[in-house]
Length: 231
Image (cartoon, rainbow, N blue to C red):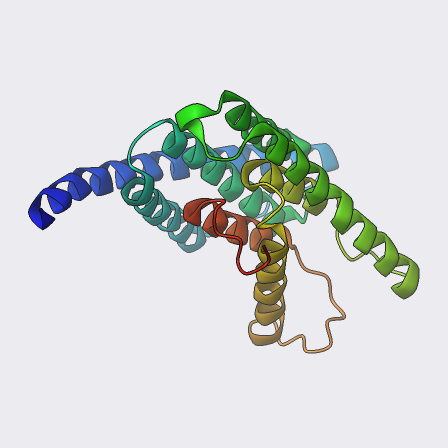
């Protein structure tokens, strides 16, 4: 019994690694094209890409794809989630380089999540009404918190791109996992600012998109049934 399970898991693992590597290459190329385009529009030279960071991103997506294939098996749902992971990687690279999340990437992520929910069946466990509620809550509630923060502190806490990314993740996951996802992203961003950048007062601004995307990738891998203790 265990041998049969292992025999089935090994091909799925290898297929996940190959598909993840291909998706990572596509995501890196898409992110690079976006960065070059935005820099050309601004009349500025594009920043140099770090080979180590790109290799780490590609390896990370390959590992996530392998775990995705082992957890859910090859199929329409795994393929849809792999596309979402590739878009999240591209968004993270663009935000880390330029400090923005382009609508040209967050929009397809949102509509792909809604389309996957509309298709139903084997394409995903989140029904369409939960996907729509997740998109609305993902944008609306953080927008309200960001508006209150801006009124009280006199500075922007979250950009509109972060709100659109969270709305897109809500379309994939539904409203239940969003509080835990946002909390995990905030904790990761705070830890990175304190430990890596030595910013203990939180006075500087940093791209929040990579942390949202990372938490969203973990949530997509675990599945929308994991509500992280908030439901």
